[in-house]
Length: 400
Image (cartoon, rainbow, N blue to C red; front, side, top):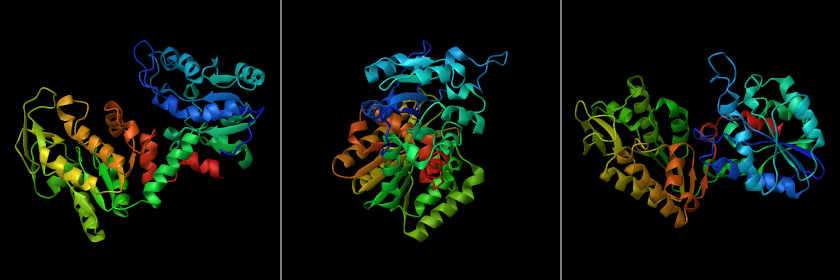
């Protein structure tokens, strides 16, 4: 981050969209800790820190009378914890922009920290409104975007605001730089073999990702609910398993494309199936294409785990996005956890691994393996779109 910040007011967009319990206590501060290197650097260099973020979707979760639920979505909830992380007092402004925000930022001294109220309390935020972005820009001398998790949104505080700062007055934060560098390492400079492990419920959610991956990976492992669409497309019996019937032709085309490109596309050979979508349902293990009526596949089976593991262990670069089964149910989380452990073990033996968002990150964190993989992305949707080859507005705005 090559930006002169001494004695300057620094407007930093972070992603403090953290989960809160019913008492508004933070239950996972991963995103806050991820922003610390940038925040500490600015403070150490003598900048005054003005922090902005969103929290939840207050415009979509309004009260019955149409007003915003301030108590549920206020960023005041993060102030005490941020103060302990930064080891200094943190002020809070109940406005995002306005007279009080202008006054409080104007009074801010070098080394001091101010958190502005939730950017999404303003309906102009999601519209990328120039007037609102201008008001934000007027609060500071320089702008830093460290919110990779929202880089795919063309919002006022992530994208539009950047146009009011010259190239010398704006910069990515350290987290954004790391996210981009690690994704590019997989996309543009991977050691081979390169293996992508893609899970999740639906093919339709990851069509672009699958098509893109087939262009440059050596192995593509498909698990989770989306695998049953491929199995059905190949004529298998999948019982009541999740399946997108309108995507059967697409599944066949993806397999044909992989074959033509010399990419090994691997599906589960067996599954753990259940007679109900419930953690306590009856379970048994069967071949993936022999699931009886009224039963559904909810996890990869023992044989699949070993077959996937064998490919992972011989890889030099690993990309993992999406669970291998219904990870939120303990009885159907074993496949995901097994793959998480194998990815971590392979990383420790010299492979590079990027965990690209969602339940894959939850699995790695739950098992305490975050330090045993190369990089855990903080941005699920943003990382997905970046890997799909899309131009992210939050990144493009900083480069122009």
